[in-house]
Length: 565
Image (cartoon, rainbow, N blue to C red; front, side, top):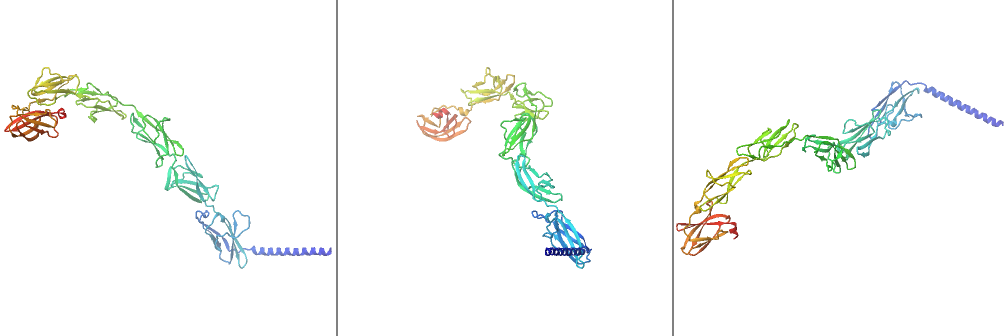
């Protein structure tokens, strides 16, 4: 038991000695560190911004720490680092820092946030100076855009921040084509129609509490089925009745055409206009017009309404005191005057320049009046057709009147119920009051006509004479011609008393024009055939045979009947 007790006492002695040694060593060290070198006066922090460097965007924040010292003593510098929000021990500064006294970091990020300590130890005395600087920079937003959905209202986009998933503290600025912020929400509804190509882009700029920001863009956005539609009116919204000059058209706010897959249905006063299913519509009735548009994807939208009004109808009716104008006189045409109504008279579609409610018509033609209301509405009246009472005569058939012949004359007038009186020279022909008159005597004929309203007119005159060349007396029966009427030829048969000779043949029409000039051989009881000239028309002709200083004439006819024979 004595030996065991001695061992225990010995162990306790050595333990006490060890503790005293540690305590002495600690006090010695403390005594050495308690002095200051009075060399290090502080640290100067330099940084490009309050924003973190970012490998995605390539942004670099260069941070440097500069030692401030008195430059009176020599010694060593030791840098250490305590991470942000850490309760542990100081550690070596992170990778990326360079330098021994002054240090810098070319790509400082939020991972490097924390406290930086510099300890200066004087070589001669082992005294120390300590200085600490805290560096805290904000994270740089790192954003991207997603296309979330396409709806009838447009395309929804959202922004996301890789460095701040919740987006707390971030400020958003959505832009289109560089315009001012259109939204500050995390989501944005793109309502521009069509495909935005080239320079057209949707942009988002996200900044945080420290002013750090990132920007992202999206382009080539196709939003073809967006119903950015409205009604455009070409023309006036106040029309005259019957006016079809105004046109309602469905258009898009974007400068692009309407897709062929879209459907249209026009409404008036909220009711369907059946058959009105095109993008254009011509209003013909007053009311409120709109159009329901359905896109190819089934989206629907009703356009803005447009109100169309129609002014009261303007009209006029022409009355006339007669439908017949006496030659050299006039008739009165008139319309009822109205308050503020203007008139313009037309004849045969050409303005006469007369603007009164009354018009005196001296010539026959188609008369109408253009009526203009106080509001500017115009309309043509009914058309009336007054005629000037006139009489004319003409001969039916040949106008040659020789002894034993007759010529039928016929009269016509522009009015009904006319009374006629035929005249030869300046004397009325007793009993000649019919429309037709058969003249048997040479002379100048005309007719005087009186209408039912006592208009009087004298017709043109026709002079009936006898052409002596066509009525030459033929005393000798030396030859005959046949057939008569003829068609394409004539046969001349000579009598037995005719001697042998050569004769000249002329064929002359009733105008005295020579149609044929030829020679034939004349012999007793002989026959010669003469072919009529091509193009000989129906009518009366003379054949003249000249022989031995004598002329012999025969009259013959060319008729359709003869030509068929």
